[in-house]
Structure formats: C-alpha cells, structure tokens
Length: 82
Image (cartoon, rainbow, N blue to C red; front, top):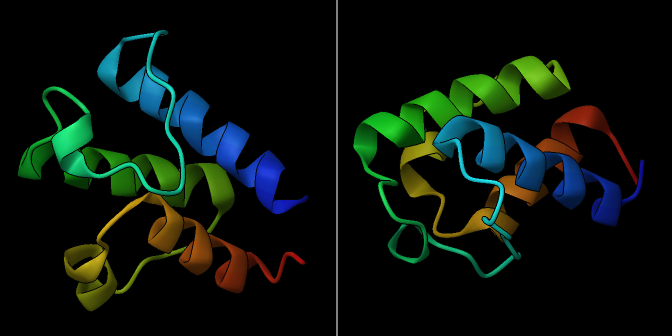
C-alpha cells in the first residue's frame, strides 16, 4: 500500500466519520479545515483509523498530531508500509 493509497483510505474514513462525501483531505489538512472536527470527533477518527489499519496510536501521538500528514506518518510507520 502506497502513501497515496493510505491517504485515499484516510479520506474515505473522514467522509464516513463526518457523513460528508464532499470532504477531501490532504496531508496539510488540520482540524480547522473540517467543519465539526472537534475533540470528540478527533477521538472518533482515531478509533476509526485504528480499526481500519489494525494499529494503535499512543496517547501522546493523538494529542500531538498537527495535520493529516502526521497521521499518515504514524500509520505508515505502524504498518511498515513503504
């Protein structure tokens, strides 16, 4: 799975989580860019990502992610995807 494929899957999870097919995330996307992305939705996203990719985020990681690109970095490292 390429990084682009990971991003595509992450985008799909965002669309499902926010029930909005018009959402398109990039590596630079932050919570400020997505309507309704608050702390509760952040937790829901983390849980959905963990299930989808079969990984676990560490508490510090969930709090320190600044954008979707940092989320991809962690997913890629945990799944050992090149």
